[in-house]
Image 1 (tube, rainbow, N blue to C red):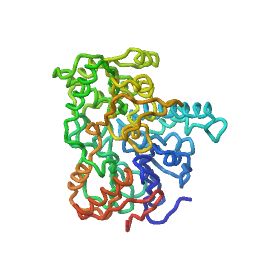
Image 2 (spheres, rainbow, N blue to C red):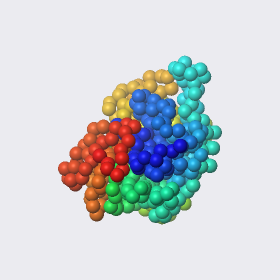
Image 3 (cartoon, one colour):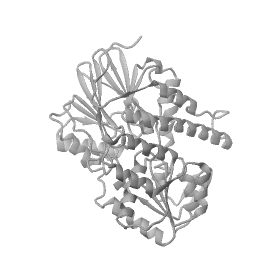
Image 4 (cartoon, helix red, strand yellow):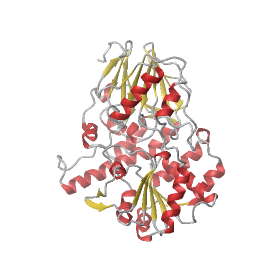
Length: 461
């Protein structure tokens, strides 16, 4: 029997961390899960993926997804496997990207389990993946693609609308009316000046706002990131090196190709080979072409991007890149070095100081990318300690997230202050810094919720 007590919001993730986005709305006997993401980074955070949800999966009536990145969607296969039988609502772009991301995530879960078996590091024998590729494929049957700006009735007195968020293809803010309250979830907010995506829709009047705070304590650097990229490519190419660009397969890889294409067109970088070594990024790029109303790029810019890079799909061709040597540019995933083909390239080229590795955005705590950004001189890759003597550069100017000024500027578009603003999806220092700015500069009530905390919606505190 579902609970009939007053409407409330429970923070099942994205608190004290920048990953694991999960919010449970309970209203009038209906349970809605907003985002269903994986926890990533530090092991103590990742272990939350194995903890049972505080409510039975079968008791959840529907899932709403803000966008396709795994820290917002990657737990869906486990939820479906564990008994969730309702619909998963997402925009068309998010639904299409999840067809790429979720099966790949299941495949990686199985690979990690096999590796844990090989090392004997799992408490299970055999080691168990969080979910399998087959679980992920099955979960795709639950998706119900939705249009932007079209109200969706979810239960008695509950209505949801997806609004453009920028950030990546399909990314949405979610506006909900439930039990006489209006709630607004930012998802990941894009930038007003993003070269690829349009800016996020302005904030309308809401009672309760749940905002991300990934860059809550930082401002994007003032330097032109395209100019920085050109400087690195010229410098490393001159010494015959390999430029490895660690990029998220969805969104960031396209942005990096766009900048390289523009630099090549202007004659600002040498004519050296460029490889896009990520089957998922290749497929995602084609999806961007199918949704031209969501981004700024003209058809001729897409054509130039594809002419720039050699698309590397097969594992054999990926391995050949490690034998080729420089000068060349390799764009590959994952963006925070948590897995994927980029690790093989770092293993091959990381020990040589003539090469360079570009971290093209935010690096969550506990990831290899964060370790390198902090100055680590070796990385543990596939059970081996790999010395890193290549030049390492973190270029946060390529981030697709609004920074602290961007978030505050977006909030200023609201016609009235929310009753309460909850700051989530950030490391503790970032979330608290944004909380302080919201109170000081906007005069709004704001706080950072605790993990698993439940708050009443009629009197949020």
